Length: 298
Length: 259
Image (cartoon, rainbow over all chains, first blue to last red; front, side, top):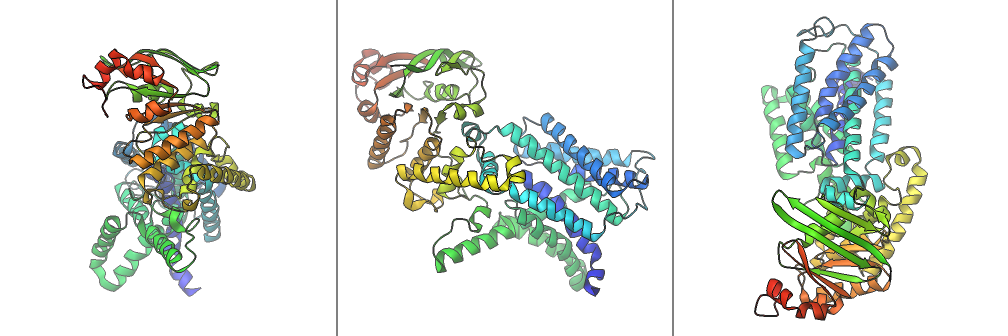
């Protein structure tokens, strides 16, 4: 219990970052390079802050921003329907940065550059954990079986997806909407834990953390979001207490190393190891093992 | 015999380039139809138009009495029209079995997010059915021993056969094949030809684009020749290849040649 109390802030952060990581992972798995969910993290954070300060309960304070995220994400998907790859990444990044500027200039509603403080802490740990578990359950169902394969086809080639009977645009729009809703969920729960929000809550810094999280964890599986969340929360803390100012350097180096040598992240390394062990020492049966988790090596 | 595909005055223009220019075809059910022509003659563009992946500039497409000129490409597999691509497109992160299952997922509703979330048991049952059918399709192309392999680790000929299995698993009535023997050895080509004949025996209509004229002459019931976006000859392979226009446009003056 002592450990739990001392690390409550970190545990809350991990929960929020798992949600943020999943919001990025659901789109990246399908080859959609969208960072819009980080913008909607800010929308969720401010939305929840305003609603909770007005005395609304946790269901309203979280539910309304999440719905706004879903709808906003769907609308954004329609606007960027023709963009792919890095172009989509740039536009959704710009979208996120514009939102952060708007948040800083929202007058009394958003508290300007100072932001909003003293927000009621409506998200106790049991609630946070339950929400995360439900979201993991829902997202993991999208990554297996036929739905999972449809995301892989989408990433591989849209024409192939069409010829196999999938409407790639509809599926893309749905995933971007889901991603934005998850971003808003993460943001609203974040603000109900830390009880303040400012324009810096969801700016470029969070984009860096989010991308680091999912690159290090592995973007091809929902497990990557969990591993990545633990990594980005605990590594700087651990490093900071042992080697002081060198922490950030090692943090950055770890990111570079993983991105260079293991593009499918920590989960990819582990799943390949598991598949290798199974293949070499056990039956040779690889189907259904961690193989599906690895990023295609073409 | 009944006409299954009717292509009426179809054009695909890119600016001033007439990639396909007023092509009309009537394809009879159950035949293996060959489409040949020099590079850039518009064969692949025509296949793209027939599979609705390439937008038409003009013309009409009728499949089994249904005008599908404006239907989205994603609806065609449901109608029974499947295709393969010139470039092999298999997912290395998935097994051979899973790659073939993809060909049936959409048709069986095995990729519905709603059933994955709200009817997981139903979703698992559908997935098992799709798996069974995929296994049958893999058996057909003779790769049952490799179902758990990474498809990209297999020889090129096997990869092509996996793609064929993926197209066949949905039991299409018509199959569009874009250069299924490209880059293959002689033996691999013979295997594919045999496979196409088996598919033909099942009554599946096939349109085959390929550069291997011997393969086309030996296996096709009807041969169409394209040049600069237009059809210049059609008929029985032997007659078509002997046609002086075809010799001039496609084969050059030397007569017989492999492109």
